[in-house]
Image 1 (cartoon, rainbow, N blue to C red):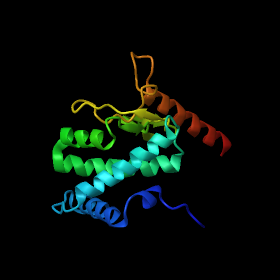
Image 2: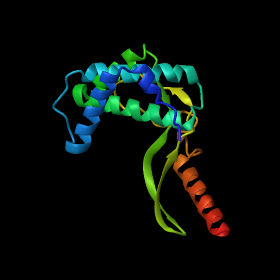
Image 3: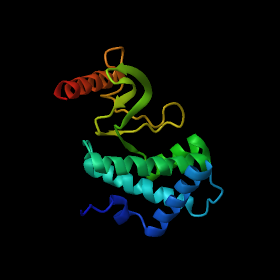
Image 4: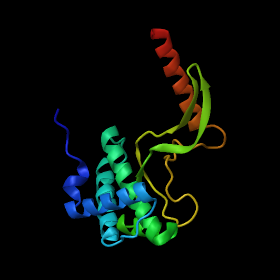
Length: 179
């Protein structure tokens, strides 16, 4: 089976990808890293590549496989910047790298909730629409929202977690009926 090469392979130098991978491995294994050499440059390269790609796909939606790669890559780079510079410093870097207009993918998330289903309790979280939207530039509060303005809960009218729960129950009901 032939798979498409990862987008970041063509946009981020190999040594910077390797640096980012060492950071990820350290955090997964130890919960932290003390080796920061070259990490800022690697983070900047990943974020720049992601932001460039998001501008191409704006307003989206972004294809699911590509969205996954972009979301995970940028989240790891932002995680490293937060470790290094704190949340406000990381956000300032994010805004600077994005030339004052950071973009994000509506990926969902938020606080999940447990739902009782025919198969027992399951955890659900809000699902994103994978559209590209402008991320906030502020350095406090919700700096990296997972939902675009169209998917965010608003005034009690929109509840993405409830919608995800409804879709989960419908999928399970359909599968149980077909079994």
